[in-house]
Image (cartoon, rainbow, N blue to C red):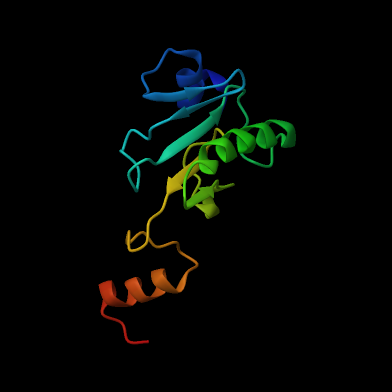
Length: 127
C-alpha cells in the first residue's frame, strides 16, 4: 500500500475524518472508528507512512514511545501491534493499539487460557 491510498496517511494529513485524542509532531492518537474493543481503546499512528513495526525501527520506536505515554496513566493495558496478514494486520500503516483493561472485562487475547476457555464454551467443545 502506498501513502496515496492509505487511510491512516489521510487521517494524519487531516484529509480523512478521525476522532483525534492526542497529537504529537510525529504521531496521532485516535479512537478506532468501530469504537474499539474496550472503553478508552486508542490507536497510535505515526505521521510517516510505514507498513508495519518491522519496516522502520526508528518510526516504530517513536510510535511505541507515544503509546507508552498513553499507557503510563492507565492502571492496566494491552499495547499491541501486528505485522503481516498472518498476525491479523488488516491496515498496512503501522498502528499501535492501547487497550485499557479491567478485571473481568471479558476481553480475551488469543494466546491466553481465558481465550481457550471462551472458545470451548462458544463452540461447545470439550477440553
